[in-house]
Image 1 (cartoon, rainbow, N blue to C red):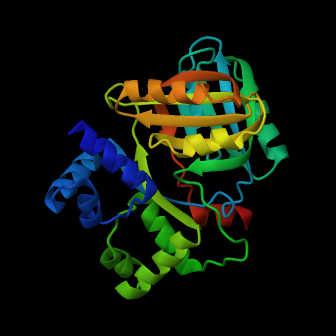
Image 2 (image 1 turned 90 degrees about the vertical axis):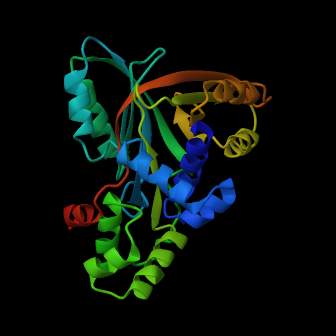
Length: 301
């Protein structure tokens, strides 16, 4: 069932509300088989299917990949990082660094404040930062028009979907006191406009039996062929053009480690890749892109 689960995870990362019938048709399985596998993965905590508002809508206009060189036990630092709303990702990694975090803020000044805060921990020996300038691919990254307006009913819908991205329209309709058809229309508008993405977050720890690899690429020449090649990888979770430590950062995730080795070899062979650094995600302590939209709006007041 490993191949089936992997295919289901990839499909649900792209569209967390894809119907069981549609998934079954694509995989050549029965609807009952697909439903049972998805429910089992959710019940076991292997995946979470949640909604996240577009970072721009949340005021998250500056995003950075932060690699930490540790100096001693890091439990206090990890706990503090995980508690921050502007840090959606915290992961232990191999290689020259001990920890990877992603920080999302409203502006460069706020990012600098977050980095200064992190440097004050005695467990931090050094930080290496790569600033995202263009996100090419991401489960919870979407583009939306700044002119797109959402109302309080939209916010309540998004809040419900933050906790259960596959909540039925019947349940959502009862929650926001609309008809099911009205809820379906709002969901279609929110997702098609890029205001909201609904997808699967994959658990990653010693028991997940998946391999998650980070890539840091130094380019020579035009980077578009490298971005295009990454987008063709079914294992791709995230890719962004950056300034700073790397020219491009990406994440690949698969149940088959050998597949990732082949992908890395293919990418390294591209003439536009001058150098590639890789790291293995050992354990992800936090991966939560579903920041409360109502809380964010209240903070911005």
